[in-house]
Every structure is written in C-alpha cells, then in structure tokens.
Image (cartoon, rainbow, N blue to C red; front, side, top):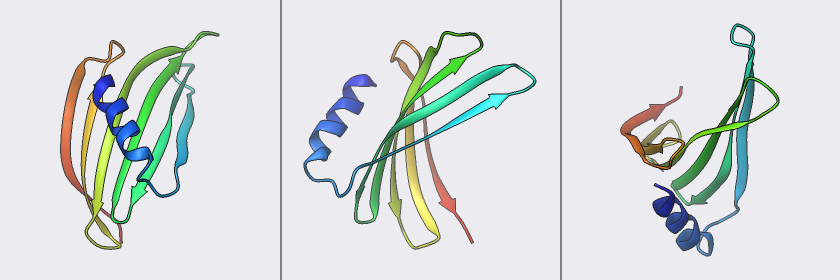
Length: 104
C-alpha cells in the first residue's frame, strides 16, 4: 500500500492542478480519545486523488493506525464514482471499496 501511494503521489504531482491538504480531527467523549486524519488532495479535471493517514490518541502519545488512497471520477455535479484502498498500521492491505457518491 505504501509503495502504491508513494508512486501515485510522485507520478501525479507534476501533472496535478492545485494541491490541497485536508483532514479532520475529532474527540470522542465516551472513549476519551482523539482521532485525526490528514493528507494531500490532487485534482485533474473530473478526477481526484486523496491520500490519508490515520492517527489515534488516548493519552499523550499518538498511534498511527493506517492509511488510505482514494480515486474519484465526477460523472456530474452531483454524482461521483470512487474507489478506496486502505491499509493497516503495518502498511499491509486491509480493504478495497468501489462505490457511488451523490449529493442533492
């Protein structure tokens, strides 16, 4: 998974439009834990690529929990096709998903 993610980032960075970084941070009141995801986004017309790393913390230390790479293709303003490959904390393959995302 790491090799695929790095190859995609390296091969596409020269061709990409603006590169953005997005993420999310949330605190779980019930579990008293913090979770964070962050990574770069690339856009090539209707095609987007997002890669993320995931980190969790229940104390003062942060633990790497995995990574993902998503590719999406915009069919219209409201419908995207997407595929996501995820890996675990050891960078081993965990799962792959293919789907449709919509908004109205």
